[in-house]
Length: 210
Image (tube, rainbow, N blue to C red):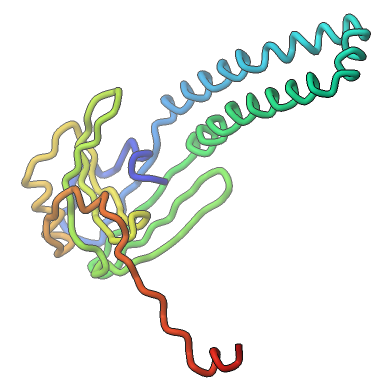
């Protein structure tokens, strides 16, 4: 689950002490609307092919004529595959998000994440000391802007969102920093590329063996 996909966090603010578990979920009503929109778009895109199928069923001669012209058949097949791709990709994305939730547990030394979705569960842990700081990020979209408090890691996929609100007071950010023992950092750290890690040198015996 990406940071942008999280729509609700319980508890809504910083805890008093660690450990604390944050229940994070996506907005199901919004995803249902997206599913309805995706199905409607699928019907629009695939309706011409349904019309062609009905014509072929009513007039078999038309199907025979099409089969005798391979270029037309290839064009129709490519158009069908492209239409299916435009339909399948967003529907798969919406389907996987309709039932997704995550539990983030912060302890004095460890960050533990358990994510549940339709295909199963994913668990991972990361030492709290490996995180670089706490950032106040403002995310904008067509629906407006939301404020986020994010526990930032050098590996973007391991960054964890801690709080969401229309506005977040500086006192809340200070509380998260105090809880984690990490400094407040600029939100641009979220968008910095991963640091380059040179490959380990190849052992001399392996070079001789090659």
